[in-house]
Amino acid sequence: MLDVVCMGSSTIDLFVNVNKSMKQIHPGDKTLVSNLDYETGGGGTNGAVSLARLGCKVAYLGKVGDDHNGERILKELKKENVKVIKTKLSKLRTSFSVLLETKEKDRTIFTFKGANNDLSLDDFKLKKVRAKWLYMTTHLNKSFKTCKEVARYVKKRNTKILFNPSQYLAKQKSKISPILKLTDIIVLNKGIGIHYSGDNSRLLSDIKNIKFMSISDSILDLYKHYEHNISMIDKHEIEEDKFLSYAKKLKEEYFNEST
Image 1 (tube, helix red, strand yellow):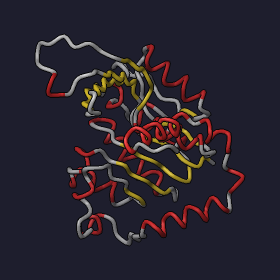
Image 2 (cartoon, one colour; image 1 turned 90 degrees about the horizontal axis):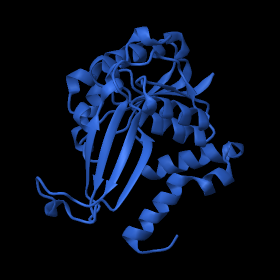
Image 3 (cartoon, one colour; image 1 turned 90 degrees about the vertical axis):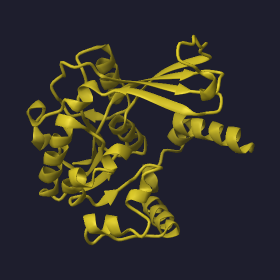
Image 4 (cartoon, helix red, strand yellow; image 1 turned 120 degrees about the vertical axis):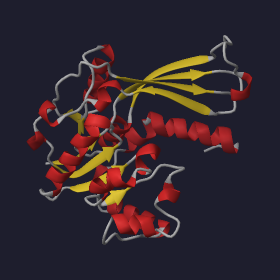
């Protein structure tokens, strides 16, 4: 059995860097770009790759278009040892985002959802969604309805659910309530925690019998897990991990300290 099925978006991200602040960019201006970077991304695929690099048996469930970008995403998932649950290709184009980053590290994102919103139950075999955990990120429109059905299906088969809704989805309590009632763990991105935290009353009303842990206890619990599963850790993979290298670079840049 798989450890995790990741269900969420898959995109091609175009990172555009400019040596100006956002205030210096005006409508109609032609602005020089200092750097371009073209990568795969998306909440579902990012989660799947991260877990696969940690040694988990992972599958990805989502929809891409019948185009070059969709082909690239599927190839990279295979390269990262992520199993792809076969779905029909969408007639819509694969999701695409442009991320504009200024010299002050302000970031504006322009995103085209495309195939990400086009997943239906008829596109794949539901019985293939079989794992210890289901990790769900944000889907909209037709795909969100499919998420609800998948959540109901796996819950009946004792699969645990981790739900990571986006800011605009997390604010729609009535819409996400059916999934919240089935969720074991909810993860909220920076900027939206207040909608479910504060005194925790809203979160507690949506998810019954939830258990809270302090940060220190959570870290200790995670440490004990890996202490007893030390064979899962690949030291070389951690040392060569591109994301960790990027995180170290950011730490040095923002905090002026070496790691």
